[in-house]
Image (cartoon, rainbow, N blue to C red; front, top):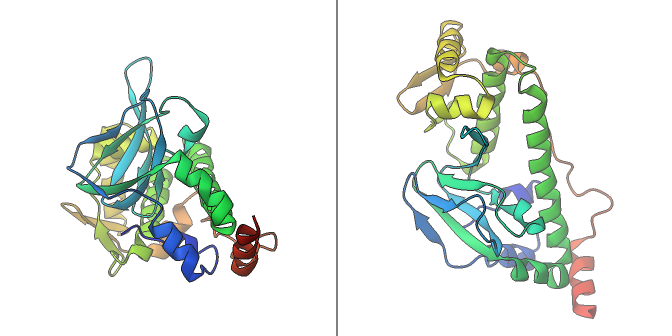
Length: 250
């Protein structure tokens, strides 16, 4: 079932809105680790709701180098930039086994007619994704490797916590050092060296895929950008009752 926590962080959902969100996608599709869900350049007809597992999106440069743009976690939407394109903007690949649910563009269009407030919240959630990419762009090449890794681990901690998979600041981290390097623009060798520094400073600990933040406050002090907090039910957002009555009137 698609996790809806990010929408609850933006507004109080009505029962109808919750139901519409949970029924937005097609039957769930299951993927093995390392499978490609979408290839850059594919013809597109919709986007994906991320139900479970770890997934990343990437681009291939003309040089052949791969650039991982983002690590996706359950509750994310995958491939939404393709709404403006005829062909897929990026490649979506599973890191672990994963589950997605496909949403045809036509069904998403109907959301604006039948659940306009929910469609507004969806747009709001996409803007939070844009802010995240803005922050990533701001620090890439302008922050030290230590600062970039601090920000990455804090971002993952924040995004995994609502899923209930963080305990004592510990969570599974299935990213290889090469993937972390692709995400941050740092070589795998430098990633390895920086991880060792963070461990020696008593900030993190890692045993296999099990990752722990030992000193959250100190790691937050290192991160070059402060975390973003979405505004809850902004004044311009209609109430759920208004949204439903407008839909009924149309």
